[in-house]
Image (cartoon, rainbow, N blue to C red; front, side, top):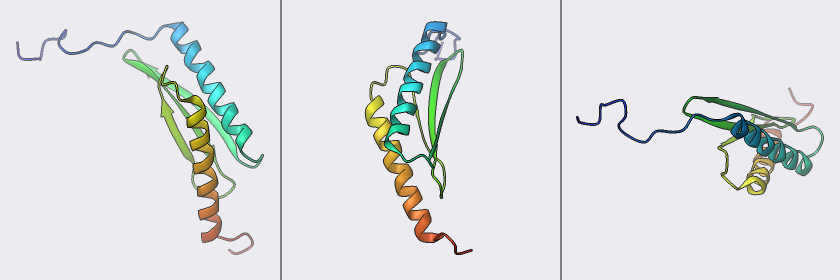
Length: 107
């Protein structure tokens, strides 16, 4: 066999309900930390997606002006506080750059 057998390669275990709960807790923590770093007019949300091969979470920030800034992560990435800070900084920069391109009141 040359790598085409169904059992060849690395096999990921099917995510358990505990994996989903742990990832959801991590998602909530990151979204909450991100929200705490930003003004109230920034909207922060998140979602979990996955299938039999694994789970991934995504946190997104919609600045008051500009495009959505988002980042994905997997369970146990371990960089929750850093990710929250980077998302918040990215959203602020997006709003600043978009505000420069489209000042309020100018249409």
